[in-house]
Image (cartoon, rainbow, N blue to C red; front, side):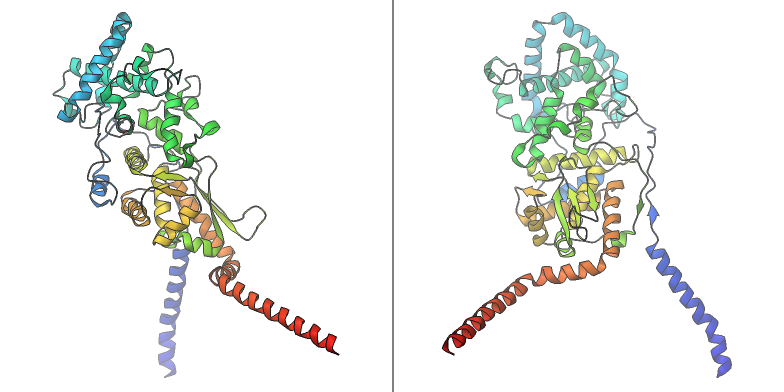
Length: 464
């Protein structure tokens, strides 16, 4: 019997050592690999929607299939060029452009020649160049000139120097096809598949002394903000457009969507981060409230400014999770999807990538039930035009198709540390949070009974 025990002992010891090693590996953090940019092997910057996000269109409660990728009113660039539904707007483009060039014919011809010289690099910006071979260089250059001109003229028309000026005097707004579909046109100009390469835009800017690009982007960005207030001093578009800044820090944007994306995300954070195991990433909005973590809206309102603080000012035991507030409706849902699709095209080509995808994924993790959606509404994080079920469905359906990056992992790394360091406080706070009504009711009853007891005691004392 004793010999049998001696033989089994080494096996039991090895089993214990193996279990301990397994636990250590489960708790051991790993490092997110992309802390430096990876150069692109291709000049392609305007790609088609990824298959995963196309599948999202089929399962979304809000969006119909491919609605997020397809323009509604105007085609910009070659992907949707020639579609019968845009012929009316194509005629408006050509008519208004001819009217504009009558007053500046020499300048227009010079810019046309410059755009023609950009045909080869502009073609290489689009994915699937073979699909564009039916367009000759002259036709492609004319399309670039016409679409780029329309884009810049729309910016000028949307942000006039004199806001009280009559729209009848404006080249575009005087056309019924334009002023009756302003919302659809604005939506279409920020679609991934509806872009013109930025060098073409820069060449066309010679036709205007100052195109209000920053004001236009501010106007577009306001639809994401509660109360439609502009980001104001936090805007980075002016810095991104300035040509005298360091090109390594502020590279030329690939197109208008890329510039808008940078504006909404903010500056990159390139530090390497230690991140927890994915199995630990599970906390809903209601669970955070129970743990004593307060949800707050970030002041900058940029999607990249997510942060989890283990200590709130003045309340050292409580935590704070800060996220950008967002208005969710058909327009903003469409733009969020297109910015996420743009990130998918970038991949690991820049440090601290997938900021918008990380933002969407964090919100999806915070929502499992309608109560979580209501908590996010109450804290001012989400202001949705959709019902709780549709809002929950949007984030839950989109998140599985997205990649995540530094910002996503940073939030949950700090949340994991908060759980480990404040486990006693969390238990106490959770008990108080769940039973606060009962505690208040009991204290009220005790207060009433105490008052009655004092009254009875005082009456007895008077009688004596």
